[in-house]
Image (cartoon, rainbow, N blue to C red; front, side):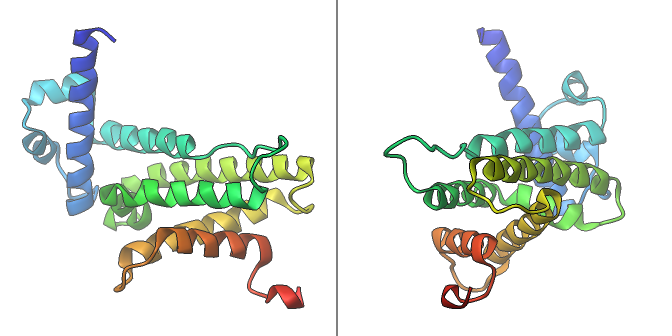
Amino acid sequence: MTTAEQKRDHRRHQILDAAKAVFAERGFHNASINEIIKSAGIARGTFYLYFSSKDAVFQSILDSALVGLNAQIIGVDMSPGAEAPNVQLHQNVTRVLEYFLADRALIQLVITYGFAPDSESALGVDAFFGHVLELIERSLTYGMALGLVQKCDAGLCAAQILGSLRGGIQRLTTAQEDLDVAVVASQLVDFALYGVIARSQA
């Protein structure tokens, strides 16, 4: 990147961070561009150099989150000497949980739908989780091809895993006591692999 490109990239992220904080505090519907501009410490014209509307900046937040989420997931390594697949899966889930927990404003947006399930933000959040669902479904299909995952309806199982993941994130952020991310990740992986039946009874 040139210096000018770096400055533009920095300013764009500055606006995104400010908007994310405003959306998380006010909810998408109640947030205004004026509040985003004030939080970012920029002029109105500067905002419109990067984003055409409140919807556009919200969608950019979700797009960036999806890119960041994808970066946390590493394909299972089946080469000799690689760690066991369940260990690698645990590491992936831990990274995903830590990614969300590092950005509480993002959690506020994607878990609560910006405070209003019927608001404009709901469509964007639904699309975000639709992409996540596709990612999980592709992973399950790949796992079946490798013989690591039993034959199943990949779409249905993906929806169940996504529900567990969202529940785990919400649990981590709302629990009164401090929870260990690695322990929660382990429980989510165990649930996905074995359900709730004791392994001795499975």
